[in-house]
Image (cartoon, rainbow, N blue to C red):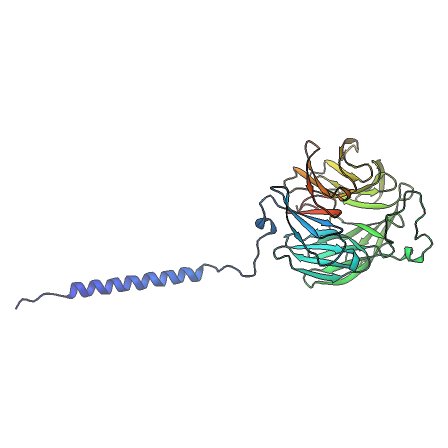
Length: 378
């Protein structure tokens, strides 16, 4: 009888089994070391539309239109769940859009990924919105009446009404808590809002009593009042220069903008076209842009000499604007033209109009960009 050895087959089988077990263990270890996707994380809003970014435009008789900056087309409209959207602002990460809704005295806090809306009560006639860190600052006009503002030199309907002298409040909203946490008292009919370079002060234009007031941002204490009447009435827009050394405020009924130094001392005024409102430097601080409503132009000035460079013809009731993230284009909201005018920031020429109906009021862009309602992140 011939003996046939079997240990080679047995050894081979055991070796294969060990190899398979080892590979399985390695796969499991690799899987355990690889972090799983965070179910709560969300991509930046620009990822869902285009790498070029997105523009958000409020329309007073509608909601918020979203424009893809790569195509310059409206890709969707967000329902803000209230009437009369006006001022708007973005958090630094672009995940929350805050919109003032005039008719119900609130703001809409919008998740830009899901378009979910939470309303927070603010006070009568909220208008201007600025976001600083995790807090939103919203100006209000408790003494404002319906209808157009009075013409220069014309007595307003409210002149004999005690309500006109009611100090307006700047509501401070904690965006994490989703609630108003305090108020800062401004002048009658607060309008524009700006922050000092070190974020320690809040600068407010008060159109009803022709003042610009400076407040401690933490306590709300009034630190300084700059009266504008001798230079021009109805201060509206307010903007700090990129280097933090200069503040500009448009004087709508003076047809000027006012220049203040870093300590809020008056320096000079600069003549503009009729009824200036939105104002901003470019990102480098080399040029100043002013939206002159009744003149139907976007004006461009040299930021050092204050000499006018050009008037860019636009549309009707153009108030607010923003540069694109690459600083190559400007989007200007023209309410009574039902359009966003797209302007080449180097050639200083209108290149396109994007139809946005129902009185477009203002525009902000993500990634955050320089403009009359926002500031580019450094």
